[in-house]
Amino acid sequence: MLKIFKYIEKHEWGFIAISLGLIIIQVWLDLKLPDYMSNITTLVQTEGSTVSDIVFEGGWMLLCALGSLVSSCIVGYFAAKVAAGLAKRLRGEVYDKTLSFSMEEMNDFSTSSLINRTTNDITQVQQLVAMGLQSIIKAPILAVWAILKIAGKSWQWTATTAGAVVVLLVMLSVIIIFVIPKFKIIQQLTDNLNQVTRENLTGLRVVRAYNAEDYQEDKFEEANDELTNTNLFTNRMMSIMQPGMSLIMSGLSLVIYWLGAYLINEAAMIDKISLFSDMIVFSSYAVQVIMAFMLLTMIFIMLPRASVSAGRILEVIERETNIKDGTYDLETSAVSGELEFKNVSFKYPGASDYVLHNVNFKVESGETVAFIGATGSGKSTLINLIPRFYDVSEGEVLVDGINVKEYKLETLHSKIGYVSQKATIFSGTVESNVDYGENSKDDSIDEVGKAIEIAQAEEFVDSLDGGYQAQIAQSGANLSGGQKQRLSIARAVYRDPEIYIFDDSFSALDYKTDRDLRKALNDEGSGATSIVVAQRIGTIKDADKIIVLDDGEVVGIGKHRELLRTCEVYQEIASSQLSQEELSYA
Ligand SMILES: Nc1ncnc2c1ncn2[C@@H]1O[C@H](COP(=O)(O)OP(=O)(O)OP(=O)(O)O)[C@@H](O)[C@H]1O
Image 1 (cartoon, helix red, strand yellow):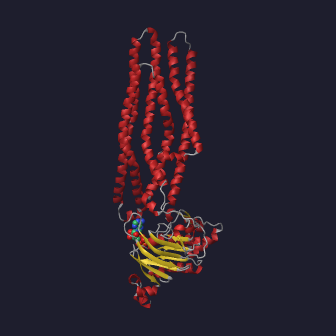
Image 2 (cartoon, protein in one colour):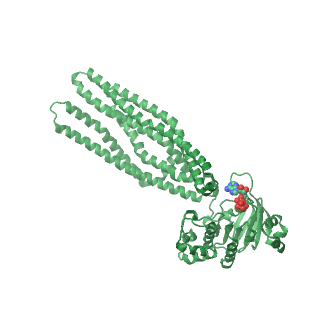
């Protein structure tokens, strides 16, 4: 928990120091009130006292109360400022760290947990700092000061106060013992609920189409009930605290007055008045002692919850990504667009089996190389190793003759135009989706137009209301699958990379658009290398080189016709897709 405080800035420590001073003043003013109360009690019972004497004392009481109020407001303001500043910084840190994560870390944490850590967990820490800053500093000062004030008065009253403190501590200990373990699991249950909700909402269409609302609702209910029951339990336990506190405080005052009545009755006439005013003062201080112990215990209740959250936040911030940045940052090199896999084997982190086995191939600059193979044969896995979404387990991947691990990631990524299997579209405009990322250009509009034209997206973009400035909904919800694919291809074209990576990116296109797009890329592209994963033989049969994967192994490399003659796996795929005529022509 303490580690999280290193994210508090210097000037905020200044606010905390000022708050400390103000809290000392506040406690002093609060503890001054019973003194004036005592004076007023004595004045009331002393012959010859005037109303103005009492008003004078009352005026000081009022000033003390006002002073305490002003201090408390300023402390509250500083506490909120420090807490909000810390939360903002933590959110930034968690978000930046998340962006640097490789797929391995993303899978480890899960998206919903990362969102929860960025929101809910940081709010817990923010609340602790905002509320705790006042209580943490105030409670010990108030406790010590109030005890010093009552020490040495009547032993009967002191013993009663001590007894009340013991009862309070027992009550709070019972609550803490039952509640704290529950706090720890609340965060996990919230992760769980987020995950189920995300799954339901993102898959809403499938849920409806399969009439699976009840099934999904059951899943949601289960997660929701678990969280609700845990929250109910903790809230019920915590709700005992308020009436319990009132009972202890009122009971204490009652016993102090009852004892006082007994003591005053027994005392000599001359001592009665001073005993009476002592009783008034003592009961006020005793309540302050109880308040101080309650504040202290509140901290112990809030702390575990916030420290669980702080731990979860630090876990993200301190997690070292396995993909270490390299140092090579020369964007231009003697060769451009060359790619080589040397004895590459790969298994997913935590998995026991290899997904790729000893893969070797070389792609010359400007070539189009296609990967084909059954589903699950490792095509996407293989191309994910080029931009280092994962690192190879064995062997080397070389881009322009240099191991990808040696590149600065930014330099490596600037060489690559990656189009994912599932088109990724961001909310914004057509233009902001194409002119995207670091390579955003000033005179972008002509180049956006060219990229859109090459990606065969011109017709549909023109038909959109607003053209390049047409609004795109979150995740491209107002576009068709093929339109999304064409926009994400335009984004890669706009980047003008050395190497294109198309991970089954033409699958949602009709045959004609698929053919026109490949032709436009060949004719108007700047001679970049293309790595294409495809399911359709039609998409890849003109490639310079086709690499056939089977269960993570390269079982054939060559041109279409050559493979039709020599590679059994390719023959099988081809015969399932091409007509006899096309096969025999080959
Ligand atoms: N993140 C992951 N963690 C563990 N195993 C994975 C992960 N992603 C894929 N795999 C496994 O790796 C194997 C290869 O998957 P990959 O996605 O590379 O196949 P593919 O040839 O691209 O398939 P498709 O044509 O269906 O997209 C599969 O057996 C899959 O279960």
